[in-house]
Length: 547
Ligand code: C2O
Ligand code: CU
Image 1 (cartoon, rainbow, N blue to C red):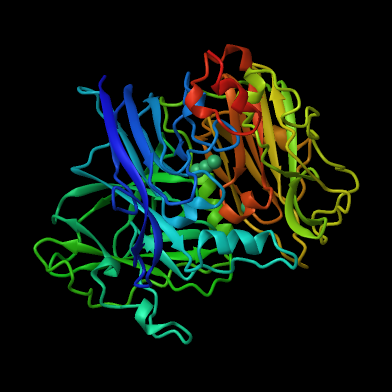
Image 2 (cartoon, rainbow, N blue to C red; image 1 turned 135 degrees about the horizontal axis):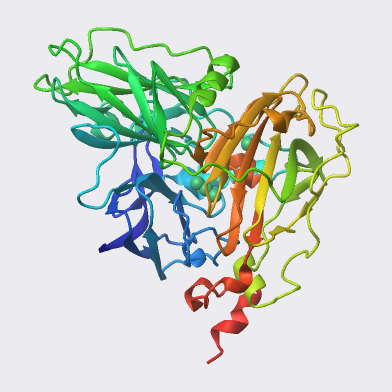
């Protein structure tokens, strides 16, 4: 194994990812930032200089478990204090598993500013994947807003509430095409011929097979991705091998990654469209477009066809069916423990707390503490956050998930779930109606520091006595992000075997910002000496000046 050393400078720059000029957060001048290429068991060191004028930063390595390095998880408020403007912070961690991962800002809603990129971990020399391909490519799908991160965040926390709305465009590997002739758009800010917003080109050689590593880091949108005329064989999900299956379009939620194989076996005299489309919301956002370019055709030559329109936005069944197809590839994933030590049912509801629109889990809306949990717990700073445990469930018998959320006693809290080290934990994500009549949304939940087995999906209210009998014990996939569908439930199981404090949250940026998240602690006594570089905020200031 090797050490991969990166030097990154994070800055604000004017860019036009979708032809509309705005301030974007770049890494070494780029958004998406550089792809981290490494091999299993390599050590990645990222020396990060924060050159944002007046803004803090923190970067999370999404899908990397940070075994033995919980302070490098990059979640501001949970594992570290923010990196101040002008400061340099060093992230150091081992990429212990091959697969497709991502990185992104994890400070407020900063991810929406464009601070994100891909991580690709290859097998060690001499080992091979259980499938073959000729070339490997990474693509990140995203949605894009013209309003600044601050304007969005301020609206969400205002009274009256101002929703961020649907994104202005969809980006494929950092490129999208907003329609500059949209009424109200200042002509000087939007230039349809700017090369920065020409469609992303994926060049292929006829006859070759490509492994496309597709990740989604959307702020809001659930997506469907497809390539005109080409089927995709799904072979990997969140770093785990999948029993291969073929799709025409791939549904992908924010925080998920997939590897698909495509073969360039169509008419080689032309190019083809690739497109992303918003599903699960009746969105006004136009589809994202990219070009699959068959060499030697000109990469800018438009395909002679109309781009695929994609599936219906409200076809929940098609999405659930695809999720159910995702099974562990035989021989590659440990089966889950037969029983669990603790079951936590998490009902998500939308409600108002002191006039603010918030999301809650079991009536508790998540608030970040001033002092990151990892430091507070390790240094025994008992006043740094609410020491009570958040509820293990909700009022099953009486709560109607189909009616407008009625939970006037919801509160905000920075309390956390403390798990017994090495125990097996079940999480049941239970979806419900929002504050709008007949409306329930899709939420992709992401767990830091672990992978979990996806034990099952269902519609309606989870039944404690009958539903666990339907769990998949044979070949459940392991993932780090999974969706809970409207009015449905999703059951996960994981082992609390990674000492540290780990975020678990909806990967929709605005939902997390509105309280849809929480943190788990396990094995804090086994966490090694914390680097002082993660300190400096809240009650941790005191530690900086000790010898
Ligand atoms: Cu990719 Cu806590 O997020
Ligand atoms: Cu959500």
